[in-house]
Length: 403
Ligand code: DI6
Ligand code: FE
Image 1 (tube, rainbow, N blue to C red):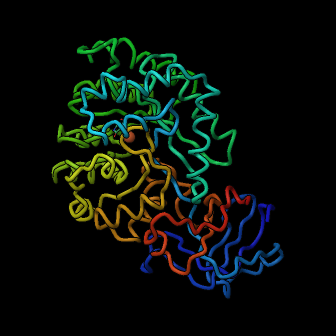
Image 2 (cartoon, protein in one colour; image 1 turned 90 degrees about the vertical axis):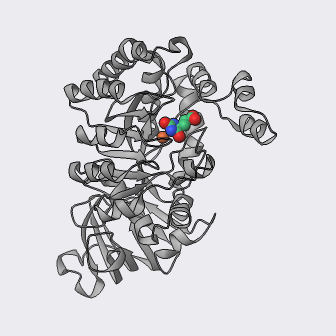
C-alpha cells in the first residue's frame, strides 16, 4: 500500500468530526484518498460511484483515527539528565544537583556544544518513538540555546526533522524559556539583548511558526513576556505560553489578551483565566508527563475548562528535565487516570484539539478536503487507545496518503 490514491475498506473510523456519535465513529466504513487528501469518508454502503474505480485496500476490520499530533515538544536538545534523575533519587538536594552542573543549565550547555547534525541525530530516535505511535505532526520548540546562534541552530534542526522523516513539523521560538547564567539576575537585559534580536533573526530566516515563553517565578514575569509578544505581533506571528505550571501569575490571561493559540501546563489556572481563554479561543494544552515527573499535586482545572468550552489538547512536553516522555498513548492514559479526562477527550486532545492548538485546519479530523494523515490500529474500540499502559497497538501510519 504505497499509492496515495485509493479506497480503504473493512474498517471502522473514529473521524473525530464534531457529531452526535462519540468519537465521530462510523462502523463498516470506507475512506477514499486522492492525491494524498481525503476525498470521501462514510459508511461503505454509501460509497459514491465516482470513487469505485480506485484500487481498494482492506484494513481487516481495524480502527482508523486521524494521525496523532504532538502539539508541545522540546524534542531537539543536547544531552540528557538521567544521572541527575539518579542523583536526586539517591538523596541529593537541588543545590547539590545544581553544583554538579545539573538542571536546565546542563541542557543549555550540552545544546550549545552540539552541532546542528548532532542535534538532529539525537532527536531522531525520540521522533521515531512518537511516530511509531501514529503521530503525523510534531511541534518543536527552541529554548535550550538562550544565545542567538544556538536558538537558530535548534530551529534549523527542528525544520530538518521534516526532511529526515515523513512528518510535518511546526516550530515555536522559545527564547524566553530561562535566564542563562551570563544574565543571572537581569532577565530584562536578556530579553532585550538576546531574546528579541534572536526572534527577529530566526523569523527573517523563516524558522518561526509561533512564539512561546515560560511565564513563571523561576523564568519570566508577565511584563517581560508581553515585550516578546509585542514583537511577535509586529512580525505577524501567533503566540502561545507555558502558563500557570508552578504558580498563578496570570499568564494564561496575558496570552489570551494576545489571542494566543494555546496556554500550556495550566495546573494553577483559575476560572478567571479559563474564561479569558474561552473568550479568545485559546486552547488549553494539558501536559500530564510533566505533572507526573514533578510529582505535582495541583490538578489542571478540567471541570472549569469543560464548563467554559475551552478545547483541551494533550502533548508529551518531551524534554530532558520535567517530561522525558516520547509516548502520546501514555500521555492519553495519564490524562484519563490522573486528571479524569475521558478516553474520548484524550483522543480529541491528540487529534482535533491538538490541531486547533497549532491553528492547523487541514488535519486532526477525518473529513473530505483534509490531509490523508491516518493511524490504523489493531483495536476494536477507540477507548482502548487510552486504556492500555505501555502497549502500542499501531498497525500502520498513513502520511499524506502514503504508507
Ligand atoms: N516547563 C517545563 O516543565 C520545562 N520547561 C518549561 O518551561 C522544563 C525544562 C527543563 O527542565 O529542561
Ligand atoms: Fe514545555
